[in-house]
Image (cartoon, rainbow, N blue to C red):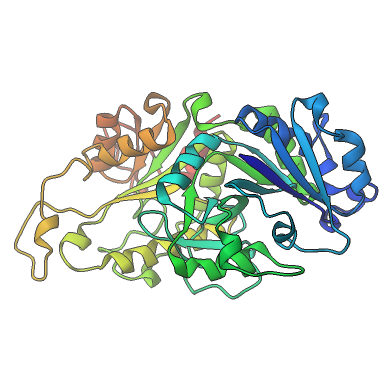
Length: 419
């Protein structure tokens, strides 16, 4: 597989840092960002690269040459005029599946996992997606249960009232089949002119991952990348097990109400977003695990629950916070509710205090549960943490305590206790 790296931008958001350098050549703890990309992709088995350049292209060519000094082969495509993020692809037209990425990203991820997903899905395009700290000005993906992209909301376009915090990270696997489906000449935008038209084929997929990808396109984000490298956060899933904070939803993150049934009822608890940001800054993944018996009872549809969770993610995103993934249990064992869904009225292994949701997250995200916390405002949450092998934390602002868990008055108070 070849990697195509887009390295022709001006770097105007970087100010003086890019006054005499292409943005991908900005130094990041002793190495250009572009070199860090090539090294990571080489570790993933890629040895052939095409670098698309324009602005100060000689700086890149002089540094890397043929790539032989770095154990890879590098070809260059120099744009005479700006072709956007997609125009040059229709000039070079790789003949096999290829990796396409922006040259202003710091990343470390398992390409094999993504490629396996891409091939299994028979995808035209697989987008690497993740929740972000600024979804309002990012391209946001609405995905189906199997990862198909149902809608794409471009960063420059208006988003729905309740949109998910799932952003296109700027890394994608692309089938050469796109060249027979689209005819593009001149400049083009990858998201707008390629992904968006192909969504209707049902063969554009979202590969959701918590592996490290960060846009370093501003001085602030460059500084964040440097800090993350120093802390050891720039790593793959399989490099070592991660630690996590599992959060109940109602009464822990958002204001407790009697069975939330529509998005307008979601209201964040003061300090929740700041607490979630603190967890991430300390290297924890953050998940929501919530019992939602309203689904089994027929009191809320899966579509409405998705809207509720989109709103939760959107409100957190407005404060620069994000959840790595939301897990929910739709089951309820007791029967006799009008309009209930019989197939969901079962005993299951995911309804808290059962640990199923936590165990599923641990498998999907390579989590060490013994280093993790389960935080909630009920004894069911405490029980789920104990049953999963986590440290249970009981949130209660009324002064009540749990004899099985450490008690804090709020999520914010708990976050302040972690080092």
